[in-house]
Image (cartoon, rainbow, N blue to C red; front, side, top):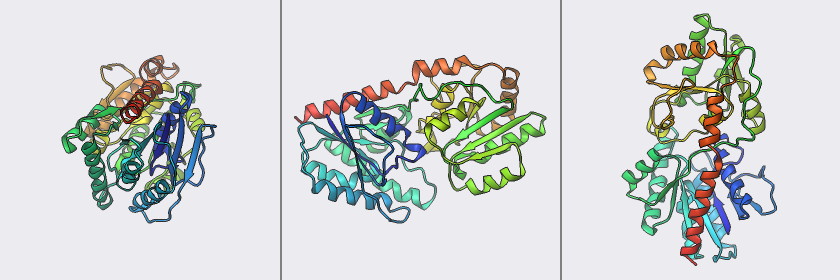
Amino acid sequence: MHVIWLTARSMADLCSTTQRNLVDGLLGQGHRVTFVNGDENSPMEHTAFTHVSLPTNARRGFQAKTLGKAMGVWLSNRSIDGDSTVAVVEWRVARQVVPGLESKGIPWALMDRSPPADAGLLSRLQWRPWSSAWRKAKQVDAEGFVVSPAHQDFVARKTGHQRTTVLQAGVDLERFKPGEKRSMFTMVYHGRLDRHRGVLACVMLAQKARLEGFEVDLMLIGEGNLESALVDVAQTHEFLKVHPSMPQDQLAQLLATCHLGLLPMPNRRVWRLASPLKRSEYLASGLAVFGIDHDGHALRNVESDWFRLVQQEDFHIDGLDFIRECMSGRGQVSEGPRLYAETNLSWNRSTSLLIEKLNDLVQRDS
C-alpha cells in the first residue's frame, strides 16, 4: 500500500509526535509513505519514505490555505497509481487537496488530531475549514480519524459524520522509560508554552510549594507566547528551569529524571477533546501525574495514588497535598505508571487500526 500523507503540521513541532509514530508504524509494516508538508527537510530516513517539501511564506492564519493550494498543484502534476494508493489528509488542507485526489481516483481519509486550538479571531477563522473538511468527509462517506471518544462524540454532534476511528496518542516505550531521579523533587510540563494552556498555573503551584517549605523545582520544556516571560522569571527564581523544544531522545532523558508530570490545560473544549501525548510520556517515564479534571486528561478505569485530577479551582490547594504525598515516596521509581503505559499506551494498537482502515479504503475502491 502506498500512503500519501498531506498535512500542514511540521515534523519539527512537538505536536507532530503522533504523525511521526504512525508513519513509522506504516513503514514498519512494509507500506510506502509519501509525506507532503511545508518543511524544507524531514528528520525521517527510510527507503520507503519520500518527503515532498512545499515551503510557503504566508503570514500566520493563511499558511495552511497557501500550503493546501501548493499541494493541489503538486497532485495535479503527478502521475500516481491509484490501485494501491490511499491518502491521509489533515483537515487544514482538505478543502484544497481533496478535489485533486478525487480527480485521480485516490481514496482518502480525514485526519483530525485536534480541532482549532488558537484563541480569538484565528480560532474563529479555523472553524470554517474544519467544518468544511468534515462535511466533505460525510458527503462521500470517507473515514475519519480522531484522538479520543470525546472527540469522536463531538464530531458526530457537530457534523453528523459517524464513520470515525479513535487513534489514541501512544508512547514510544523504548525511548521513554524510568531513569535515575534528580535529588531535588522536580515537577515538569512539556509542550506549548502558551498562556491559554494553563502554564502559569504550574509556576504558581511551584511558588506556593516553595512558600510552604517544599524543596521542589519546576521544569518547563517548549516554545510559545509565554516563553520569553518565563525565561525572565527563571533568571530570578532558581526553582524554575526553562528549556526550549528539543529532540525526542533528549526530552525522554530529561523526563526520566523528574518525579511529577503536570497537565494544567484548563477545562475548555479544545482540551476536553484531546489525547495529550505528554500524559503518555509522563507515565512511560515512571512519573506520577497531576492535572485538571476533564475528559481530555482522564484515564478510564484508573484509580491510583500516582494519578490525580482535580477541579480547576482546586489545582493549587490539592496540588500541594499531592506533592506532599509524592515527596514522601520520592526515593522510589513508581512502577505503577510504567506498567500502565506498557499495558495500555503502546503505539501498536493505533498503528494497527490505521492500517486496517486504510486497507479497507483501498479494497473498497479497487
